[in-house]
Length: 67
Ligand SMILES: [Zn+2]
Image (cartoon, rainbow, N blue to C red; front, side):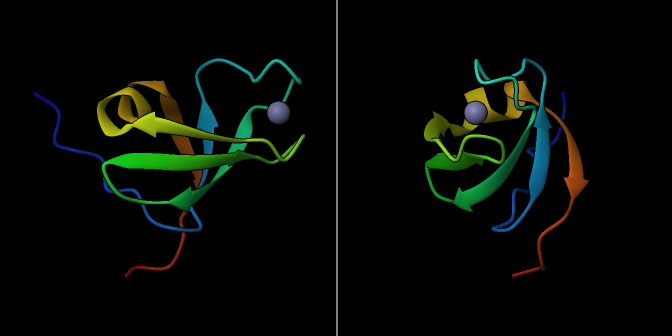
């Protein structure tokens, strides 16, 4: 089993599937039970449940600062 992903505010991540706008990179803008992402291409925000977020994130492009 994979350990839980440690998300940080300011992380820049790549999703497995591109946003409908064509963007692939997102900033993490909110942490909690739901993780908030902002598309770097169109600026739209989405909230994903943590388990869903962990499945959809492909990789970290750049890490935010440690809390
Ligand atoms: Zn977008």
